[in-house]
Length: 165
Image (tube, rainbow, N blue to C red; front, side):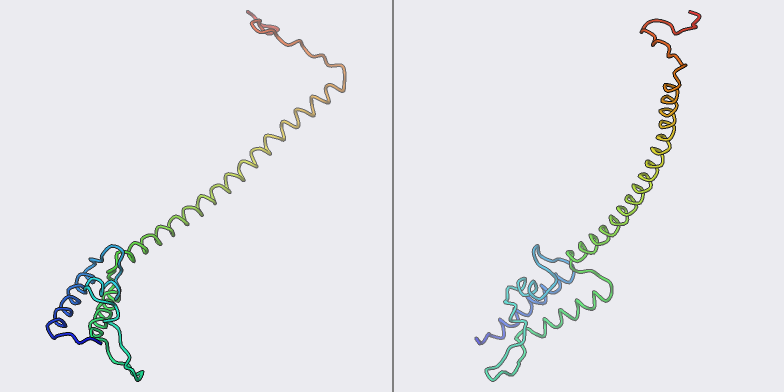
């Protein structure tokens, strides 16, 4: 591991704190999130600088800026528990979920209306079919009797039989 000077370490910590404040205020860069990866990128550091390290013997040791990463996560959790949404992507996801729920309700209502209208249409058609069938039956019955004469159809432009004109 390369040693860094106290001045560089202080400058890096200041950059991390400034990036932490910006991100927690909701100023998340495009393509970023409210997470350690974005925090490190905004501070112009690698993400591994905020993570614990391992010694050669396998024991863990804190990363150089791990305490700031833990502070960031604590502050983020506190904001979330207070009901504040820091990440605009999360707010957008929640808004879209609510919109999907409303659209599903609207769709279910439309499906119900369509079902009611289909039932009404079927009932109306069946009520119209019954008189039509009765008229057809009466016409066939009249034709079978044979003692009924049909009047000739009127020609266009002439008055019907029995007209006073």
